[in-house]
Length: 495
Image 1 (cartoon, rainbow, N blue to C red):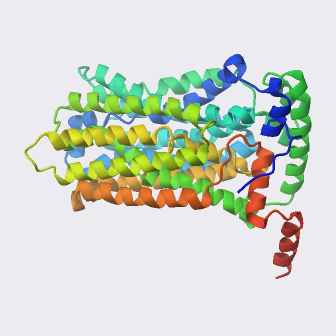
Image 2: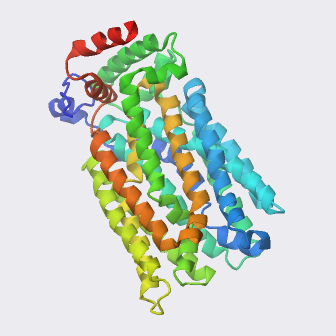
């Protein structure tokens, strides 16, 4: 799909070709880096607490002897995130991105306290649900807040920083977990410390303003201009304000009398949601959170029985995940979202085949296949993290119309968490039933389907303004004839 460049649209490639001096660099603007860093702390909330399962098993014998309880402890956080993400879209639209972030921080901190003090696995599960609620709200809010406050030319990279914080949180998790391995109550410290980023974000977020686009939709134009003035120079500021004012007036008119459940009556929104939610589902079904949640367990299944050695090797994998996310921040605004996803999926497919091969030969006396499993894990992360890590979140932060960005983003994030729950809750049981090798082979087949999905349904949105993205979906839905949409809509209304 080729989109005609609108040279008058601030932030478009044509506009920046005419006025190259108006291009914004994040590193030259402390405010942009500041709000991105603070909003991205939310990524630490659900990146941190993935490495404590080994020590919970040691402390609670009933957990050690039950795959179901192990899966439930992990998956109840995901179940909470499903509810949090579903509610988070509505909270974002009604109360704003800033208040949604503060609510998420309070809930997460409460959950961390409950987990750290849990006297048995069942109270621990309650804490996990609370943590999940906070994570779900944060997973909707952070990408949207960053995208709506970002210049279009660096929007992908800034949203990618949120994904970097997720992977950085996972790396920090294993690093701190190793430090606590000899401390009594290891897992309690691991999970309790997870509340610290939420507390830090809460107080820093109080110092930041609301998203300028949300302020404009709520007719708080003066506040929005004050925020935009911190991002753009005066020449571009005037153009951006005029554009955003026009867009917000149009969005408010479109929204009048329309209920949330009417959103999918629009063909272009259905196409956008298919692409966004499809990417979120495939991100999970190609196994990323299986790898990250259970990487210490997978390492032990590969033949490395020491908890400390399993965590050390998982720390290396988590470090590669964070490093790959840094690479993704650069590539997403240079190579583009679609191409990056396709290259990422190609490598993921090859890596999963290696993992399957290593576990098919697990019974071999040779230690070669144990190390082959580690290589497969490392390659999986190396290919996944720059592409299918940031691309789904970036695409979902930019493909929906202004007035429905919160609710559509929330529904798409809910798809992500439901898919996450299905994978996490079933992996160990499926692996026990059919074998780890066949399980990874099944995931490889799903990755092939994901590759085909991206080819067919996901357009390139690199460097496009929100207005151009909306035009892209209209062209996909109705063709390039400007009269086609109104004609077809009238036809549908009379049918």
